[in-house]
Image (cartoon, rainbow, N blue to C red):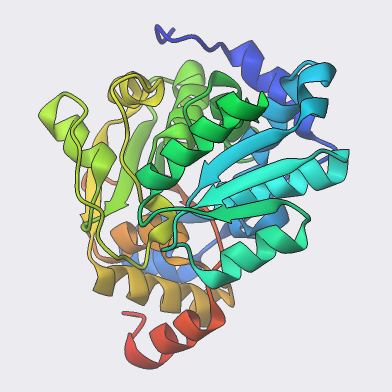
Length: 327
C-alpha cells in the first residue's frame, strides 16, 4: 500500500457520496488509435462529465465531506477555469455561496460558465499564483472554506473514482495515460489502479510549455517555473513543496511525456474528426502523447483519459482550420 493519507476505502466512499452529482462517464474504443498503435485503445470521456471536465468529482467529494455549518458559511476557490466551474456547479446544486478567483489569463468561455452557475467571480492577477494569494487572503478574512483544485485528500479521492470505474469496466487494463498538472487527477487514478494491481503502467502527460510537475519530478524536488501561454491552459500553474500530490505522484507514476502545442492541436482535431468529440487542449494531451508515438513501453490494453472539453469555439475552429489531425 502506498504510504499516503488516503485509502482505497476513501475512494469507494467518495464514489457513493458523489453519485447524485456526477456522471459515470463513457469508456469507448478507438479503432483508429488501435490501428495506429497496435494496442487496444479505450478513451475515458471525462469531457462528457458534468461541467465538461473531471473536476466535479473532487469538488463534490470535498464539499460534501464538510461539516454542514462550515458549508453554509460559504466556499471559496482559485482556479484556471474547470475547477472553478465544478465548485460553482456543486454549490449551485447544494444552494451554497461560492466565490471563485481567476487570473486574467483564464479563457472567457470558462469565466462566463462559472458566472452562469451563480458563483461570485473575482479576476485577480496575471497568474494562478497571484489569484491564489488574494483568494487565501479573503478566505481568512471572511471565514470561508477553501476548496483546493488538487491539494486535498478528499479532492484526490474524488478524482480517483475514475480509476475505480476503469477497474470495473476495463479489467484487462495494463496501461493508463493521464493528463498531468497539479497531480490530483493522476494521483487519484494511479492510487486506485496500483492499489488493485501495482503492475499497471501509469503515464503522465504535460505540455512542453511550463510543465511544473514534470520539471519537479525530474529534479526530485518541487521547482518553480514561469508560466507561458498554452493551448493546455487547464494544466497551467505551479505546484508547491507542501502539496500532497507531489510525493503521491512520485510513488505512483511510471513515465512522463511532454507534448508540443502542435501535437496538442493535432490531437484536438483528431478527436473532433475521428470521434466527433470536442476536447480542450488540456484534455487532449494524453491523446497527443499516444498519437505522436511518444509513449514508450505501451501495453496491449490502454486507457486514455480525455479530461475536459471546455474549449472556446473560436479556438476550436482555429485548430480545425490550421492543424491536421495526423491520421
